[in-house]
Picture (cartoon, rainbow, N blue to C red):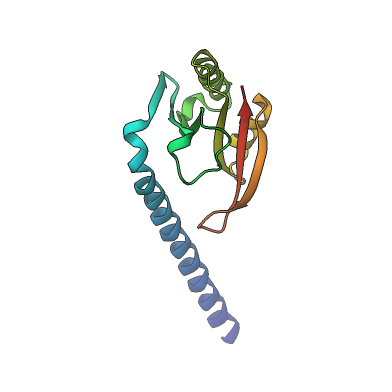
Length: 149
């Protein structure tokens, strides 16, 4: 009987723990989005049938390292589910690299949560280098990637 009660207590604890983490993550994501809203009017959007990518002049984004005054911060890179793991993220990023070069930009900078393995792999396969790393407000390891044009 004691063992059964302990199992129930542990299950309840586990459910509460998972639920609490989901709430924290959801509010963190919404907070992150609200914090970036002040930059939306400065952002450009690269669209395709397989996804989108917003990019913002890096010198106006306070929350990132300033590599130079002439680069873009990549934010909200999104590939539709049916197009993932088929090279479309690479195509979109290479298009942004081409646009940036044509405009005379010096670098691209991006922030990636380390556990987002697909995004880490995408950045590293294209040639982005880790500029710095640290913990975000959600205590997750984050890489700041830079690509010099």
